[in-house]
Length: 204
Image (cartoon, one colour):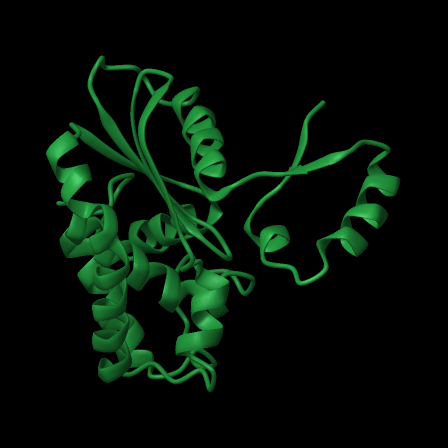
């Protein structure tokens, strides 16, 4: 058994207090892994569920506190990055009052592009044949797109644009109601979907 702590634990001011209690409950030590090691583990998990076409692929995982970008071939990672822009943290920073506006979307988009500049050229130079999204957050976005009738298993720029427009039309997280969206995911869907939209476009 191998227990690991990821972004949330990495950012704690006093992780030891949490780890002592958690390790006691588990009866097992917990290792705090770096963002790039987290990316490697995410890719390995995804690779075991994806048919190997013998081509390089991009995997994106949007978590609560961070987002990982990995290019790999088979079970080997070639590029790994982890950015501090998860859907929970971003929701708190960009939607403190729950309002969804075009200005916030534009500010959000510029911020993500700036964050990705540090590795985007290298990723594009490396290249990939297919892009995959993993994590409950991206699955929730895909479910909404499917229920809206604009995607079936594949998220496209057009389907993401429809979700963006629906979010702006709602104007507030409190009034946001989309088909296929459960209450647990509703508060973080705007940040998660906008993040995925900008990430996919920047990496295109």
